Image (cartoon, rainbow, N blue to C red; front, side, top):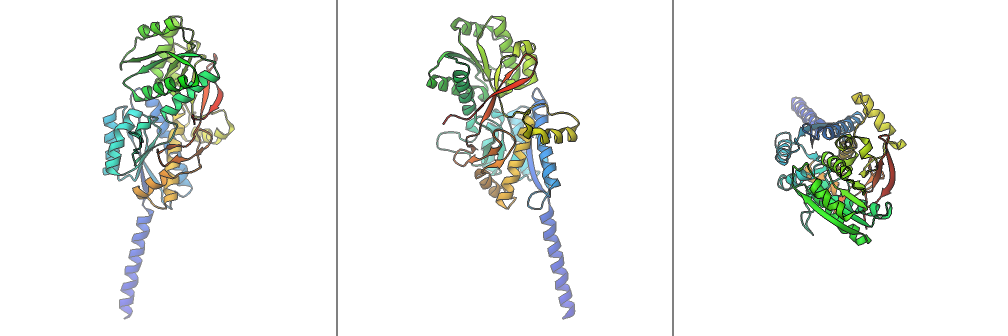
Length: 387
C-alpha cells in the first residue's frame, strides 16, 4: 500500500511538473514589417518599438505568468512576402497572434489568409477594407490600430477647409496604391461636403516620377490647396516639381510626409517648409519622455520615426487582449481584441477602444503638424474623425 501511494505521489508530482512546464512556455507573438527595401527605416523602427514593448512586459512578469516570445519577419514591401511571413508565423512558429503591418496593400493580402488560419492580426494599415471588405461584412481576424485612411482623408479635408481657409483643392493620387486612393477619395468627398470645390482629381500610374504634366493641369485651376496622399518619396518629388512650376497652393498630405525622406525628396527643408501633414504623436509632449529615454537606453540612439510607436502600441494592445482573455488561444485573443476598451497607448489621445463592428479604433484622433524652415515640426491641431 505504501509503495502504491509512493508511486501515485510520484505520478502526481510528474504531472504537476509537466503542467507547470506547459504553463511556463512562452507565448509566441509574430510581427511583420519592412526590414529591407526603401521603407526599411520605418520597419526597423517599428520592430524596435515592438521589441522594446515585449522586453518591458517580460521584465514585469510577462502575460498570464508567461514570457512573450516575439518573432519578427520581413515583408520586404511586397504583399506575397507578407502573406508568406504570416503563414510561416502561424504554421511553423505557432504564433497565437500577429502584429503588423503598416502597409495597406500587404494587410489587404494577408486578411483573407487570416480568415482561413483563424489567427488574429492587428496592425497600423489604414485601408478600411482590411477589416471591412464590403459594407456590412467584417474580417473577423483582422484589426486596425490607427484611424482609417477614410478618417485621415476627412481629417485633412477638415483642416484644409477650417484652418487654412481653403475653398478650392486639387488632389494628386497614386491609383495603384490603396493607401493613396482611399485617402484621396475621402478628402475629395468630404472637402465637397464641407462646402469646398475640388478643381482637379488626378490619378497617376505606379512608377511615375515626372509629375509636371499633371501639375500643369492643376496650376491652370489655381487651387488654394494641393492634397498629396503619398509616401514620402513621391510626395517630395511632387512638391519639388510643383514649386518649379510656380504653384502657390498650400500643401497638405498624409502622415508619410512627416519623414526626413520627404524633405530629401523635396530638395531640402526650404521646399518642404509649410507642408501640413498628419502625425500620430507629439514627441515634444512630456508624456513621451519615459518612452524616448527607454528607447535611447535600449538602442543607443534616438527614436527616428513615429513608426516606433506603432510597434510599441501594437504589442501592448496584444498583451492587454491576452490578459483580458485569460488565455493564449487565438480565438480567445480575437474576441478580446474585438472588445478592447480604454487601453493606455502612446498614440492619439493616449487611450484605445476597438469598434467590434468594424475592427477599427473608436474616435481616435491625430495631430496636424507643419514643417518649419528650421527643420522642426509644430503641432497645429488635435483633430478627431468626422462624426
